[in-house]
Image (cartoon, rainbow, N blue to C red; front, side, top):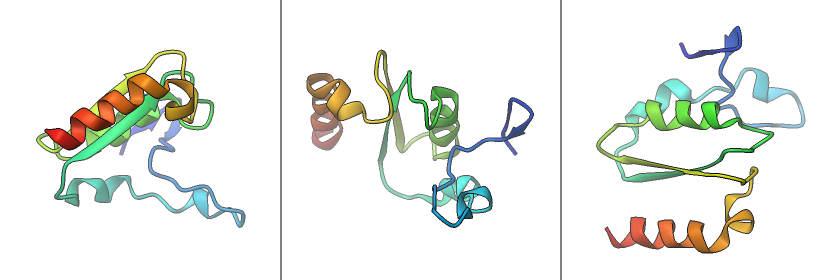
Length: 95
């Protein structure tokens, strides 16, 4: 279990109108992913704090994950840092 500020991390919870996000937690299953995975994290994300995004990256197989943090970015990294985000995505796809 990943603990953050006294409660279970929101890292892999999916927000839903009916409150499902309080019980729908995929964090433990992320280790089963078998393909390269890019995690883009905005350091100023008000929805999933950067620590929460780091939890997601840490739960993925280390040899398959690439975690990129973006300063001065909120939840939508691509609009906030278009050129830098697209460069990271291009590099991830090429390699």
